[in-house]
Image (cartoon, rainbow, N blue to C red; front, side):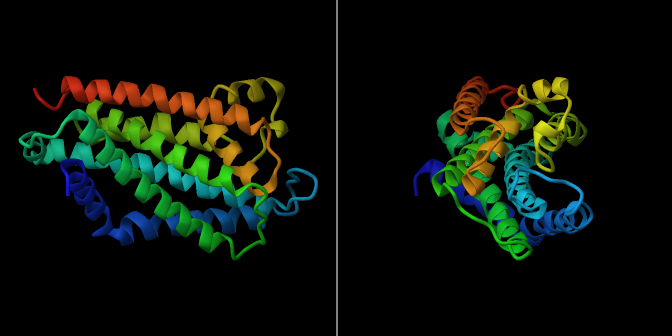
Length: 251
């Protein structure tokens, strides 16, 4: 294997060795969301005309799981290596910053998509789903996982201890995820909060992903694709620049 493939293989093994925690636990969490919200709100919330709330909820939970776990993989791996002192063994190798970027982001995508697939298979038992545009489903799942994998690298590079990483996750990732339309359509919000939601890139990832199932969305899937693609390019450029400069890993 080449250098980046070896690092990628090491990162995949890292989370796969504890798959009960990294894969099974997030799937169980999503199922609990499904049981609670689906049971309580099935007859109370109406989203779109002919789509049951439970069916509406499934794509949101799947995409939420993909995003959160892709971020958790790269960020936790980097901060653990920094704190435990094992990062030096990677620094000693002749790997370029591009190799680091591809290995960490690709492994994060594998974990995020694996958890998302698990959530989809389990929650799909609760309601029949339609696939209006499967290409959109795959596109937004892959782009979303890559974006959060790269963002996780930024957080892992910036954080110097677990408290800082937890703060980034609790005050940035979690609010943006839960306020992105996972459990509701933004058209059910007051106008001012609809406008605020349009500033959240997580909204476009989930809305575009949901369009692939129902052929309906709050905004055009092409707009969502443009926003997500642009965000991925910006975050990736920042990540590569930080890796190239050795930000907080070579000092």
